[in-house]
Image (cartoon, rainbow, N blue to C red; front, top):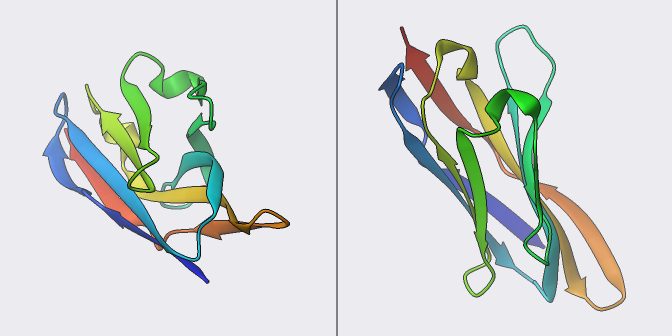
Length: 120
């Protein structure tokens, strides 16, 4: 089994920065892509950023130029650096990883979420 644990959320003023971290543990052969999603109150969960095993990245338009996703393959971690935060970035942030526990299988895993609150 694989577990994902996020950390780094909190309360920050508009214009501030935060770094989210997500660590995977358990039976891990390799991790294909890692991603961050978020869910604001009363809204559906939305994709924020993704990083593939080759390091290529994708972002939702609303965070381009402000957020940066990176990964540490040796530590099975993914990070989300968030700059110039705005109140509309307030949400619970979830990490997602597509993990191979062995060469023949793959599983989709999610963390429990970490709250990010941006005050105006």
